[in-house]
Structure formats: structure tokens, C-alpha cells
Image (cartoon, rainbow, N blue to C red; front, side):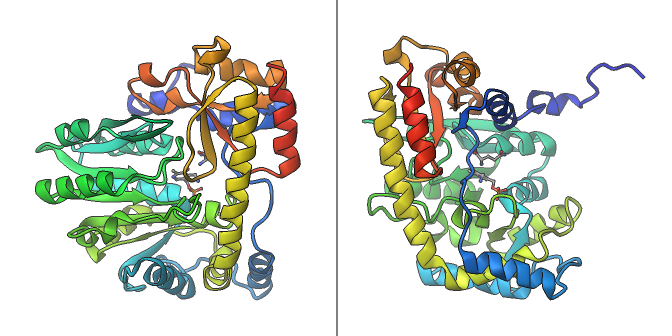
Length: 388
Ligand code: PMP
Ligand code: GLN
């Protein structure tokens, strides 16, 4: 058999993820890894105890296909308490192997080959890859600068909707920019979904990590949207457990059922003992999450100051783990090359934003820095950034 690339054409553009590439470079050069978005401290102690207890109690075999009942109930209750959204935990909630499997299940279960899927650019890399797996066609709508932050290009959004549109994938709070879509942007997305009879899949994995007194508004709470929105969230970023891979979808039964149909042949199930532990955390540790968001806000401030001091032009981060910085004041124009050289040059790893875009031009310079790191790690990164 020849050693040529045997990956199918539609997946060739996705051979390695930028996160793997930059994390490997960080390890090679012993760099502070502000590339891949994961926290370097654990979630609430009682959640970790609950996972250990679940293992001790023998919850180590396949959980039910739709997820353990206590987690489905906790997911439903949290949304009721926070947003007034009511979902039936038996028919309208599905536990997945992280938000990643939720996205894949939703896209593979709901998109026909040739259907168009609208997504906001820059987009999370899994969106493009899973739309390609489903044989769908991606249509991107860019964020545009708005002061030192970003907003949706609403004209381009309206122009993207057409007879072939079957889904819009909305990520707010937004990775990689840290933007929280405004009420006006959400209202326009909702209006277009209703007018064109389109399903919205909302990736809200950063829903609890919003800063400066902002609040997160699920698209499903807008008029006409509950019936056509599949909400995705995950324990990964909420409870600092990215390795547990516990995510979920909530939505009307027909959207959840389509997702389940695909999902049950992807992983079937996963994360058995971690599901009750996340249920425990949703029931008892939302205070921990509020504290964690406040701590993250302070970390955002520290890394933003360090980047500004190093000569970057720093964008506003309203939420998430991420802040974007423009290196052009330092005389640097190519974000990809810069990110490849940074670990060796100064011992810091970041991620180039342009890899999350189709139209790279407006984004080619920009870098994303992840700041969910211990204070001493951010201080070390700040020290190293001064070498620039
Ligand atoms: N969507 C976005 C926007 C993300 O940043 C991530 C990474 N947390 C995911 C989905 C994947 O989430 P999970 O780790 O739960 O699969
Ligand atoms: N969500 C994380 C990020 O954006 C990474 C997840 C991954 O490595 N696929 O950095």
C-alpha cells in the first residue's frame, strides 16, 4: 500500500488541529502555553470527590444512552433557574461526550449533503470539520471591528441566508475573540431563522464565563426561537474539567432526537462516573463558577496589561478564556509565522486567529492568548513577553 495521504478529500484540510500543533511546540521549547484553551487548576473539590465516589460505587459501565438521569435533571434545572428555559429532562436533554460530540451529532444528524450551514467567522475549528463530515457547505459571516471589540456584520448575515440554508451555528460567548453577541445581533439572527425556517445550533460553552457585570442571553429565549434552537453547553470550561468530556444539548424533542441518532453511533456513551459528578457540581457549585468567572476577569486584565506593555494592540475580551492581540505595532504582520516562532523566541505559545477563518485577510495578523492559568504562570508569561 502506498504511503500517500489516504485521508478522504473532504477531511484533508483538517489533518492536524492548531491546538495540537501549538501545544507540541510549547512542550518542545518549554514555553508557557497560552495557546490551547484549558485551565491549569482543578474544578470544585466536591465535584472531584463525587467522581471518585462514583468510581468507588461501581458506576463504571455504560451509562444510559441519553445520559444519567440526575445529570439530565440538573442540566434542565440550571436552565430553568438561570434563563427561565424549561426542558423536559427525559425528552429534551441529551448528554454527550463534550460539546465537541454535541456539535458533531447535531450537524451530522440535521444537515443533509449540500445543505448550507452558516457560521460566524472566526469559527471554532470543529464546526468546519463536522460540516465537511456531513457533506454540508459552510457559509461564513464575519465579525467586524467595533471599537476595540467586535460585532456581527448584519448585512452579510442577512445575505448568507438562502433557500439552501438549513442551520446557523452561533457561538456566543465567542471563541476566539471573547465577544458576547449583542441583543441586536441576536435579534437579527432570530428574525432570519424564523423568516427562513432555519434551525439554530448555539454553542454556549462559555455561558457562565462573562465579565464586567455582563449577562449571557441564550438565543433560545428570544421570541420564536425555543422551538428551533438546539443549545449546546459543557462542563469543560464551566468546572475546569476539559479532560472529562461531559457536554449536553437541550432543545425540542425532534432536534434532540436527530442529534441522538448520530451520537449513538459516534461514541454511543461516555464519561460514566463523571456524569454524576457534573450533576453534583451543577446542583451545588454554581457559586464556585461565579467566583471562577471573577478570577478569570482579573486574569484577563493581567494578560491584557502584559500584552499592551509588550507593544500589542489588545482587543476587548468580554467573556471566555481568550483575548485577541494585534502585533502590528511591533512590526509583525503574519500571525501564523509569528505564533510558530514565539515558543522558541521568547518561550510563550499563542494561537493565530486566521486558522479559524476562510477569508484570512482581515485576520491574518491577529493572535489569541488563553488566560485561564495560575497567576504565577501569567506573571511568567508577562515577563517573557517583555523580551519582544
Ligand atoms: N465549542 C467551543 C467554542 C469551544 O471553545 C470548545 C472547547 N471547550 C468546545 C466547543 C469543545 O468543548 P468540549 O471540550 O466540551 O468538547
Ligand atoms: N476549546 C479549546 C480552545 O479553543 C481547545 C480544544 C481542543 O484542543 N480541541 O483552545
